[in-house]
Image 1 (tube, rainbow, N blue to C red):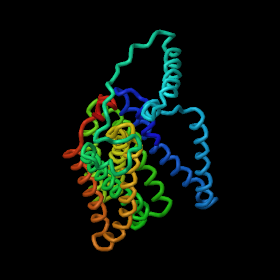
Image 2 (cartoon, helix red, strand yellow):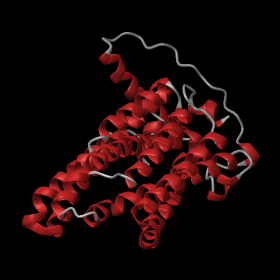
Image 3 (cartoon, rainbow, N blue to C red):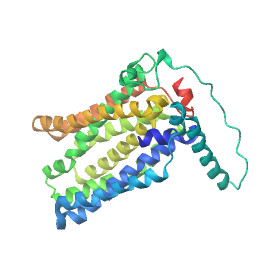
Length: 322
């Protein structure tokens, strides 16, 4: 929902970068959670960690109070007065920030009839209409295999480190250290999505994740383990940034949150299967087989983007929808 909302407010030329930055706060939270666990776990146990990390949920009341509703969504629902009110408030704030100068005349887009007689309610099955089926197939495939690989590897990362002879504390420390590479990873993706485009950036991050995951599984020393782990997390968090920037752009306003939400839900199916698949593969193929499984998942996701994906860089949401 947050991604769909931000996507509908940010101008086209900055949309991908800002959504990627929004998603980039995930590795910051991920690293902070790791630090909390490292400090609190020995004293309060896992229940204390869970309770402390529930507190930030209260921030939802700040969002409810200060974040405006999407003007595009309001207009789509026929609430023109409310849409104008929100746009007026945004324009007033922008004028204040630029010293009271007049804003340029907005570029208008013609209102086109909905395809295939679709209604604003946009039921789920219309994600597979002739206009959207290719996009839905692509993004569902990407989410499924990307999350299968990601959660299959990261859920077991601590256990795999312990199986290699490292203590629990060292395993948490190494995992936290490796995660630091996620910060430059999402920053790089945030720049590339506008400088290079969504499709090539997504393919790069997925293939980079595949290569580093494979090499990580075949690391022969602690130095190689940390090096390839840093590379893996760099590309994985870059993958998340571009995936979240790309997904909500693929659907028209009436379907944006539905389309992005369904893609994420399909991804969660992969996230459930991934750790189980690792548990099945590990006794037979060992750690190299586990990371080869993750690498293969990322390659399939990259192929789906390259073959079926369409570029959205620099286009307004209305142009993409057409």
